[in-house]
Image (cartoon, rainbow, N blue to C red; front, side, top):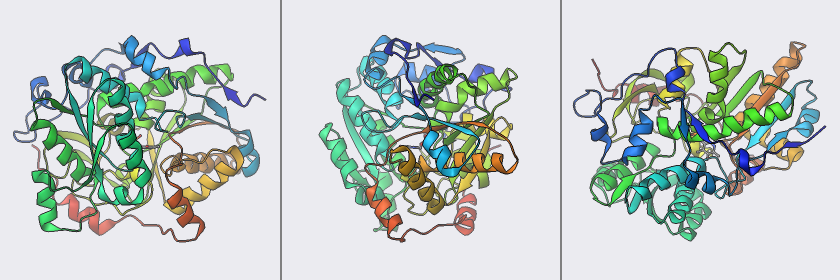
Length: 450
Ligand SMILES: *Cc1c(COP(=O)(O)O)cnc(C)c1O
């Protein structure tokens, strides 16, 4: 009974899988925030270098990974795939549970997979500095790492509540040379606008995105970088699923169910899109995105055009959204507190190719402890939503007298989230249900597109 399935370094994927040409219908166009007309590549040029804009709109199914990026990925890839024998025993299931572990990367999550690619393309284009936002600090630290690898300065707008909850993520970004500000700041118009209305604002990803975008467009040598949601980010994350497919073949299995937690959609896309290709070719497989009940974008949001940020500076994307000024409660899975979702993941969910489920945070922490006591890895609070979904699926299969092969993406470790674990162990964590009034208020502000 092997425990882990490892691939040699030369089996890091040579291409990223682009799902766009395989989708049943083409993606809805991205719209300009001022005119509501489809954006042209040059509209995005103040934000991103051309190779990234091309990837955002690419119709090429297999996009070659540059050798410099593969060499950077080789520092931690291929990541291991484990069979969770001990977890299976602990929950007494007849199903077989596998997990792909992305916590082996330098910053401890899947996010460096795209950070190194984005830093590479920006450095090649002569960009000197990247501006970005971060929620829990995972993305900021990933980009800080990738930036110094390719010689770029990095400025991070960190959501204030996380800046205070996760001081060591801040430290990590600074050790890699990034400058870090608690957002909202008084350095941008977007930040000053929020502070004028609420001087004690705890911030949100939507606000921090506005600040980073403003910083990028107002500085000639600076571009913007986003850690999730966009097509090119999902593209870069497909190394996760491509490796997992090879590793499941080593295990002699094909999954019945593939699970990822869902914040902006990139780690779910990473593990699920290569399996979605099989599914669109007739393979039976369920793809499940797991999100928090306190920020239930896919399960309770509306599939419509919305802005990606609070100050309405980003292009409009058709996606599941809770409204661009929705302020999710300060739960500990900071990386899952985003009002929107990847347009590609949204399209899969809307078309029935993928499903979404939502769980409250205390159930997820319980699942995380069960997992860590069995498997020895302390998961990120975000990843615990995928663990919870896997356990629910295994128990359901047992109740139905079935055996399933379940694969989930363990998107990161929780070594910087010990404060949250302390609170959980002390019985101090509470659940926030679907925040109906807050969502309804925010929905009223959705843009009216044609
Ligand atoms: C950021 C993050 C997530 C959520 O982001 P996605 O874009 O939905 O993947 C999940 N897990 C971890 C560990 C993260 O850092």
